[in-house]
Structure formats: structure tokens, C-alpha cells
Image 1 (cartoon, rainbow, N blue to C red):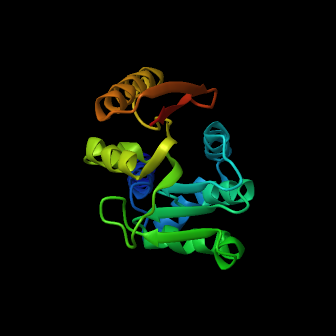
Image 2 (image 1 turned 30 degrees about the vertical axis):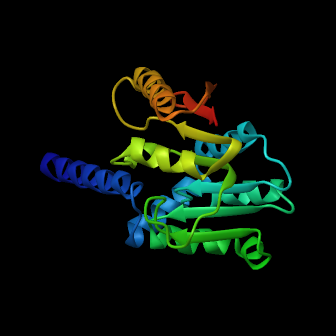
Length: 215
């Protein structure tokens, strides 16, 4: 019985590790499950809605999301704009399908356009935009400084970028969050963002932060 129990624990831990890895680039059945988790987990829903709120969207804003996942934040954003548009980039075909279904009406109306790719190698030419945001994807970028430099180039004068992160792994998540927030602000300053401010979100199991930076 003990051997069977330990085997089941090991199998469960292996599955959990695979599922966590799916949040980087969801694929297959586990990727679809990761997308469902991102769309339905209360902390993730709140993290996305608070990020959109901090952007202070205007009805005619042109907005870019990096790493749209199942399209939850795009759905929130498209409700806030009227004559503007939301553009989304994600490198997962599974997330593209989920986001396309979730935002089918807005896509058909021309308010939303989503593609498979990233900002360094976009699937279509990207215009200059008013607002840019990402939610829990910055930790996956192998060259974050290069990505942020390109995002700054895409921002119109006076534009704003919101970068939200909530640690999911590690023993001291609060310390990690503060360390990441400080490092992100320093990077933004180095790249040339003149105004930077960090907003904290009281979420469970650990606070999340959103760094706002303006050109």
C-alpha cells in the first residue's frame, strides 16, 4: 500500500510539473487545461481586470496585449473601447483557438485582432499604440530588455505600458515579487521610460504587482 501511495504521489507531482510548464507555451490537452485554469481562476480574473483598470483606457485607444492566453483580458479590454482596437500576440496555437472563440463577436466586428507570434517576430506589421499590457508573461521572456525596448518603440508619445506579475513558485513569493518589481522599474528606467510607478494588488496566495511606465 505504501509503495502504491508513493507512486501515485510521484505521478501526481509529475503531472503538476507538466501543467505548470504549460503556462509558458500551452499545447495539447494539458495546454487546453492550462487555458481553462487561466480563464477561470479567480485570482487570475482579478489580476487581469485590475491591470486593465490601471491602464485608464479611453474609447478610441489602440491597445496591444503580449501573451493573451485564453483571451480573458482582451475580452475585458474590448468592452472598454468603442472606436479603438485591441491587438493580441501569443505564441500558442491552443491559446489562439481559445481566445478566438471567447472573442469571436469582437473579432468579427473588427475591434479585436489576434495573432500567433511575439513582438520581436510579429505575424503582421504592428502599428504604434496607445497602451500595452501583459499579465504574468514577463517571467518567460528570455530577453526582457530587448522586448521592452521594442514595446517602447511601439508606444505613441504619452503612451503607457502595464506589466503585471504574481509569483506562483518559490518559497518566499512576497520577497520574489518585491525583487522582480524593483528590477523591472530599473530596467524601465534604463530603457528610457520617464515615468514609472508600481501598484500592488492584494491577491491570494501572495500579492501581485503592476509596473506602469509612460513615455
